[in-house]
Image (cartoon, rainbow, N blue to C red; front, top):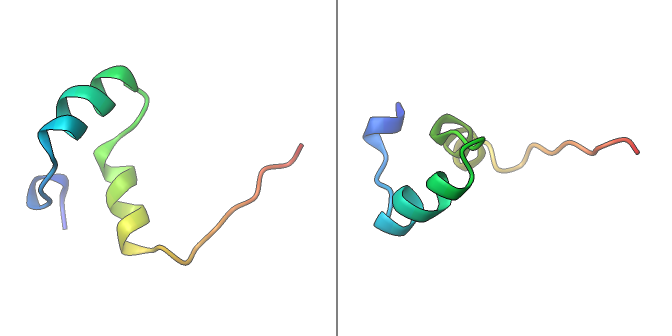
Length: 43
């Protein structure tokens, strides 16, 4: 599914994405579609 096929709340659109311009809707979709994958950071 593409980003246009998912529904987003007004809060997410107007507040979250506006304040966090580095986030992409495509990333959110991938997380929803693949919730069991995980990565750890080194550090």
